[in-house]
Length: 292
Image (tube, rainbow, N blue to C red; front, side):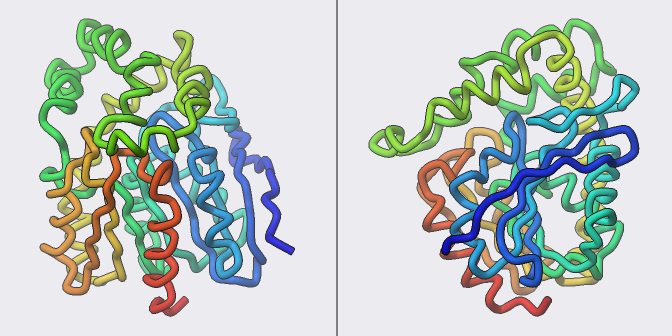
């Protein structure tokens, strides 16, 4: 019988963290960390492809999906990582690999900095750790938010241009071969928009995270030192057409990691929508050589 996905809520401080789980808990654990503007649902088809050999945990980060944060929650990447660290402690998971995508990268890499011996391997699927990976056109309006110290004008521009249904659909279509677009489930970008971006409260949370993203760049030197000193096994497998995190960001892992594996698939940002099987095969092959 194929492994069944189960859904759970865990109380971490005052936050109710939703996560799904699939695979025998006695197997090595793989933590799937989603990105903006999605949730654990981005792994709905991918996780079962790995669950015969790995115990999968896929949480919704605070501000996304079904996770409910209290009104006083401050939306920073430090706090997102703290919440996920609390979940791992509650579940008594002390050894695991991480699959990092988009916002999942700064969260997962903070976990690795906090407990480097716990993170046995890293799969980066369009999960950035180098400035070379930031596509200038997309990131310039976000950098304006940083330069203007969170100005209302910059916040309003992002609200009107990046937190829209059309902008969300773009992340599911740009950079994909035209013939593959029929494989992309339109309900995904509609869910991402209505669940995580629609309404003033959601928008304010997302813009707060846009502003805090600057702290991830400040953290890059520590991340690179961790790569250089610890040499964790890393597979960087990226959609080569991503309009947000571009291929030089994947190649850059080789600068500090002697054995980094870098692969590209013919897809855009949400590469799992069309290349989930291909990526799953690469992940299984890669993790097969990792000692947990």
